[in-house]
Amino acid sequence: MIHRLATKALHALDPENAHTAALAGLKLGLGPIAPKDDPILATEVAGLKLPNPVGLAPGFDKNAEVFGPMLRAGFGFVECGTVTPLPQAGNPRPRLFRLSEDRAVINRMGFNNEGLEAYAGRLARRGRGVVGANFGANKDSEDRIGDYTAGLRRLWGLASYFTINISSPNTPGLRALQTKAALEELLGRIVATAASLPQGQAVPMFLKVAPDLEDAEIEAIADVVAASGLAGVIVSNTTLSREGLLSPLAGEAGGLSGAPLTTLSTQVLRRFRRAADGRFLLIGAGGIGSGADAYAKIRAGASAVQLYSALAYEGPGLVVRIKRELAQRLRADGFRDVADAIGAE
Image (cartoon, rainbow, N blue to C red):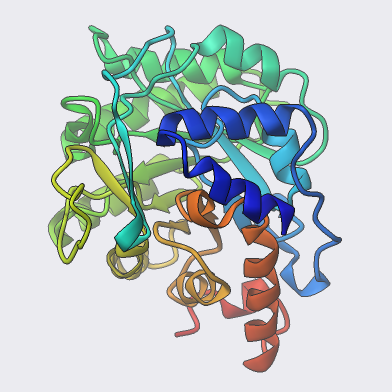
């Protein structure tokens, strides 16, 4: 209850200032401590053993500062970033907007982060728990693919898994890397880089995609991912769509996340499941605010899920409620565990 009240109090602040304050509180040890997970939620994704399938999406912990507190809050895994090789300030403020009428968020942050060195130094001190690293390219980079391979080299051995983010709408031209020829070159160089690094333990790699894709684009991406040997695809990043929004802030530029993305991201997840045809796994993200939302994505084909925007409205205690509701739904439908429900719709 106290954490939900604190979340409401933070709504009196500008959204970005509120987020900074929330991080400060977490670093001071003021975050919640979740009870032990229900055993039915334990699962394995690409060789990663998770106490539950509900992860924290990137964007919340851009600089790898609070992954420990968020794991203690009950997330089964935490993805930090997006990080770029060099520090960058991102786009001018204001660049983060709450659409309260829609329980949504628009952001045009622009990969603001402290850069690889600061990020890697914090990841190097991590303890137990699954922590992923999400990396991207600097806005003014002359070799964006080189930025991705630089991120992989610097973070190798420090993260449980890696996510290649080519789907943010806030770095001009970045989504062009989702085209087949560009993606083949990108993933080819990333896979070659990984093969040149110490192979003590296989590290899963995922591609994060946009929800604003046509069927032909999805099929092309699926074929390239399957040929590359990546572990899977994260569906999806924020959307450029503004359909059905009520908030007067709906016209702000940037990527939309939160409740309005739920249906679209789940539809795209289904389409990726058909295109994947069992060749790689899927992680579902976009608009998750309840156990029902998480369950729908799992039944649509996701092996695990991620959330972020709903925390702005519910606070970090939300994850405990989502897990409880998910466990109840799994049992009600006779599933033995999470894996049993994947793609069951």
